[in-house]
Length: 281
Image (cartoon, rainbow, N blue to C red; front, top):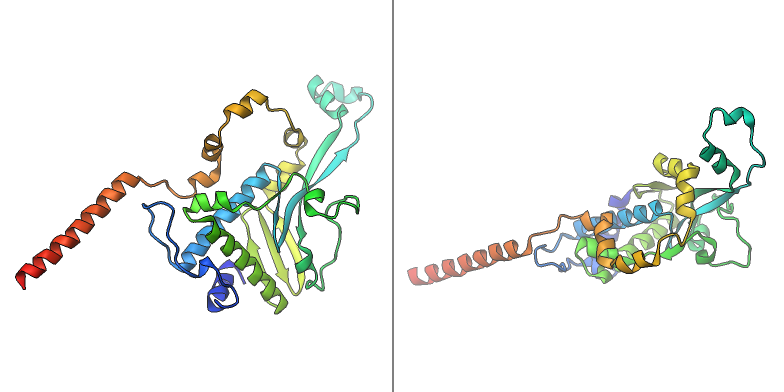
């Protein structure tokens, strides 16, 4: 079962998955009309996947309540002592300095939620992240962990955040119920594919994600923190950050004044037609 069949299951059982997603909700912009139920859920899913992909590209872990967490395992390489003169003729001095420094690699991984792990009877419970046992919370164990914020997703879809929260909660609640019933589920997030087959869990990250994270030069830039000047942080507003986000261009921004003018003309034509019909009678 893919996301389309999961949404069909949710709408066939409205009493099991109540919420605002069970009705066609008004958009936050007058330029957009309310969507059909399935289209509304699928556009939220699309924005949700884009939101996860953006966080993954920024090397930030994100936790989805009741499903699991996408995060990274930091692998540290020891610095090399001395310089191999055989390589000194073929490499530049800057490349040799990089080799002598402590190197870091980020390995993308998925940590399944304990609730789902209990019903995956054939899943080999291996530790994806090597952390002390005292750090029990996923927000302590994951790398730069954060929670799944519904507000950016809602802004990209022009819907209220409560609609987005109810939709995401219902999808992963349905996934849990379907796995319990022995159904096979395939979820494609764009940057990773997760498969629940025969009470087992497997996942595959996109080749470009694994390739980027295994590149030491790219990873070093993402691991370092606090390198942005404070003056730049003060000047960088939330509006500028939103414009740089891929979520801001997920749907084409409407020309609201033009659309309102067209709607007003349509309403005026309706009134004129009613007036003409009444005079003829």
